[in-house]
Image (cartoon, rainbow, N blue to C red; front, side, top):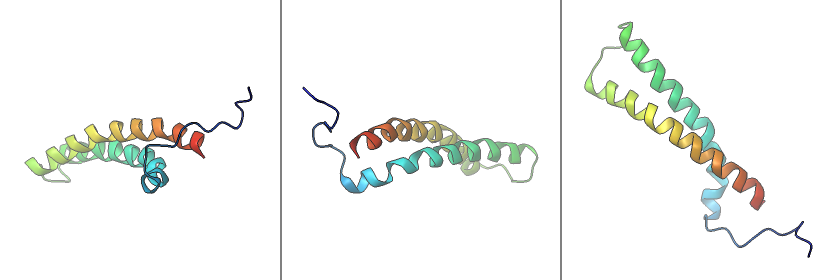
Length: 82
């Protein structure tokens, strides 16, 4: 049996979302960089430290790798579905 042109079953990801999944990788990288730079700027006292700034930096540093991994895993999936 020839499987070269087999595309698998229909994707469960909606087409609108599937178009934008490859943007998650650069967004994750930017979140990680911002999550590192913001505490460094507060350490140099260029930005005044507050609870909002600290939680923002923590959230960016937490969401960055998650977005990157999701984007990376779906990137190959989107290429395979095309």
